[in-house]
Length: 217
Image (cartoon, rainbow, N blue to C red; front, side, top):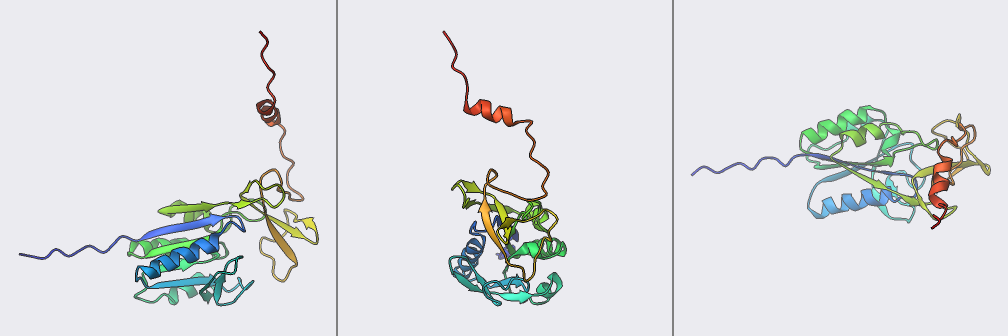
């Protein structure tokens, strides 16, 4: 009687995305710890540019921490993946270039789990870095939403403020050493200087939905 060889489990790509303050880093840490609990070898990577809270830790806004390996590029990241690593986690994936897409697909095709967390939109509400393509090739996309600091509604956008004023659409996507601050905002409360004025074409429809005249008779 011949013994059947169990096939290697298929790899997969999971993307955790959303605005700032939506809980992306917290979810990445939760998934990494879940994999560790399952006795899997896990490595967490982060870009060198992300040194807001700690250079060698993923740190959430709530203070939750997990050890991470800082890397300068996708090539640097790939060179530091151990041969026996089963789960590769990438924090702030939006800061890497498009070669991260091919690396993620290659790792998953060879049986590894890839978990990337990052902003899906920049401060202009435009797709950010490789994130849209990573979402397209992913097996699972976890879209998280924050709370608008202005009105309390569910928020999907990251609002940038510099010296008390909304950012301008022509500002650099990545600011180094600036005194900017960020907030989560809903569509209604989001502001951006230099942005094309919002169309009033469909505004009447929204108003009609809110106030409908009562039918007589």
